[in-house]
Image (cartoon, rainbow, N blue to C red; front, side, top):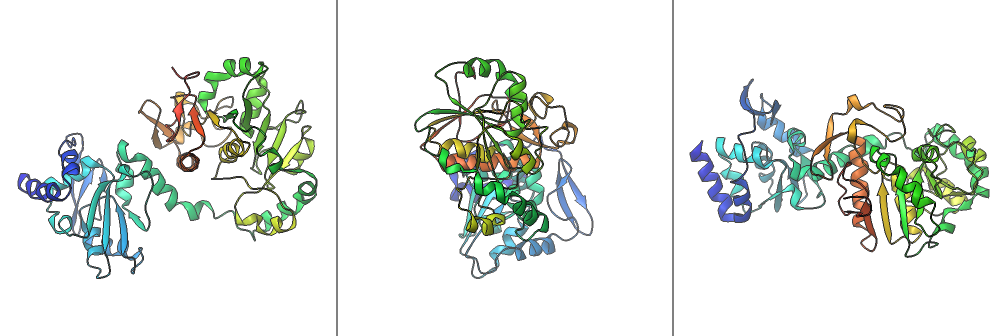
Length: 430
């Protein structure tokens, strides 16, 4: 074991000295490792097999075949046992292979047990920690075992990889020719023609501070303070997502703008009573009965989704960014209104304090807490429960924030997920 490690590290030390220093301090003692045998053998880490235990080479060949054969550059996330790297390096046209470490301790352990020099020494290989880059690189193959085993440092890249892998599956229900979608858009046409373009709200709050309020459990920490601020003459604009509307009203906090995009949102979530004076921003998939009952002014926009391609040719309306959740257009609206300081409330993307949402019972707005099998890091660097779609929504928020460096984004709580690109608002976070 020591002999393998010394030889492997010698190569890494020569080619990537700084990375070598990091690897040599990785703690492998916390890993539960065992040899698993079948027709062949592999290494199991914490109950997760790194590769097939029957035919590692054939598995690696299948994985390689999923990548473009003519691509001069390929990215592999996870180090495995080196099989996929060797398969890709056999391609004559490959000019550069980037290998992104998803778990430093797992890789350090493999270096102790197996000879990895053949691929580590290939001049076409570049080795780095996945978390050293802010974004995933294409084209890629992510080793499934190490998506599960990814450590805290590389967790955000893991989340982006999983989100990208699931993209086509998540979009399966949003096809432009889907009869239900076509019917829904036809029903909404009369309102689309008469309601105001959301563009009318753009640039109406240039340089101002705006609060964007979601429904994560940490919102409960701020109800009293938000109610106090709402009563002030000179205050930030309050934009809330649809599911936050009722909890806010019940605590005497009337938002200025509500954003909704989901056909499943009903009058139960958006009661029309006392809605006069509150503007409603929506996308055409919204339930028309909710829209017709709303007493305040309505504004409509589109997303970039192809389901709106035909209707946008008939009725011109501005676009809001949507990345799977209503939090995305709410934030985009705040930016397009001109907000220069945007503080997020209840944007937890997780289940802190053993709750799913503020103001709603467990399971009322989706899966129950007990089914949460995934995790993200909170504002204190600790793991908290979440679900896969929340992690995808977080990825898109972080990408959006990264694309708007002119705006200062703040988080109001450490209890929820750490949001890259935000700082904590000292008025709400000690």
